[in-house]
Length: 180
Image (cartoon, rainbow, N blue to C red):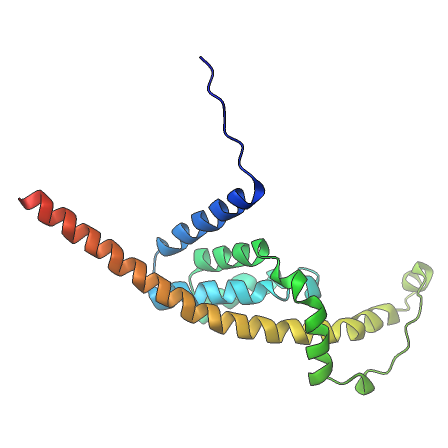
């Protein structure tokens, strides 16, 4: 007898991955504040991963520890941020927001092509131009990360407390049924 394995579509798999990560989040150690702060930091830092070229992961662990958040919750927030594709969707809007905060007139450098030979000979202006060109995106994604991090803090805290009350009620009902 062979059992056929059911093949699920991509939306079902996506839903199951998010649900699994949410269950892990609600069962991670620490109180509601610690878990929601960790999730908010992980989710917010995910917004600036693309614009920093993944260099944000160098400060990921120290930021979460110094803020007093839960590292497992921060990792789950980071994963959920990746699964939602928000950093990619928000990229064009981030450039506009970055231009509002840091006008183009302040960064008036024409786009130039650079040869690798210049870099090998000690001319590092390519890094200056890359940094100034991506500065608007970095500023915009930082704003999005801050806003979405604050929103996710309150959402996760509310959901954590709801889940905690639900689990406590289930335990009390099970204890009441057992004592009968």
